Length: 180
Image (cartoon, rainbow, N blue to C red; front, side):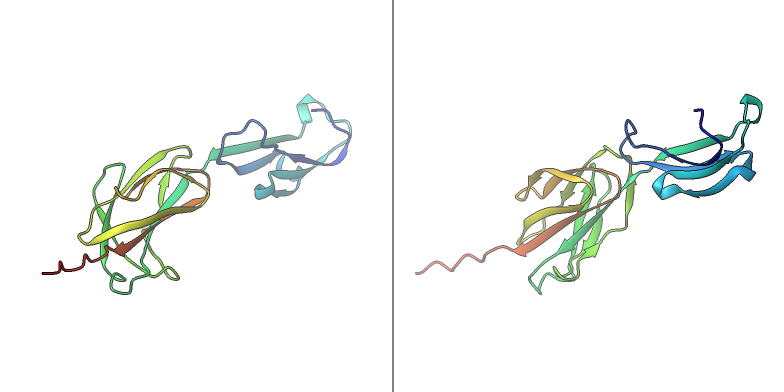
């Protein structure tokens, strides 16, 4: 770019960049020409001296990285008899891990796991006797699809940021005793 001398602000536009793209550094050469920079806004302000040529130009370099998305699974139950009970889950058919049920106001969640943006993660809650999955919901950046409460399964597509998938379990209805 050819610009007039003085202070110039350069901003990287998001057009054409992949989802999850983030500026991780902005460098200016020679370094003494840097006035200010703000990574989150993808902007840098530099001093451009009068009479600049190819041999003494001001060079601005952006370094970008696609950051992973994060996923956590939360467990809740409105039934106080289930709060604190452990429920087991798998992600993409991997090893099972357990999460204790919290209340809807105070869910208990797994640790955050990182996945590449665009990854589809298959979630499954392993069956628990006398309990059913009442709902599976997602909040945050990802999207939920293929939800099957009877099977306790869903697929989440990871997006930039954090996706929270919440499983709500409730006790099965107790069948009445047959009348004799």
